Length: 95
Image 1: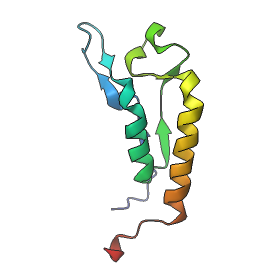
Image 2 (image 1 turned 90 degrees about the horizontal axis):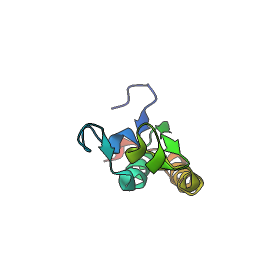
Image 3 (image 1 turned 120 degrees about the horizontal axis):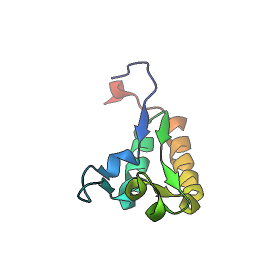
């Protein structure tokens, strides 16, 4: 149901695996695009994504960070989905 509050989805922490590398958190960044696409398709107001030029060398959250060189393509795809979804808002009363 609509709460009247904007919803922001955290695409990168959603793939974080706390303690996944023993003493530090791991992550499965390969799942960021599909989760971000699903969130945008569901109509979220915004996305949060941690990025890094080289996530494997990041001092924090590297395993779940999205590579900065790949960000532009992902954002372009997400904008297309967002435009399509919001051009015809979902109306539950029609179901």
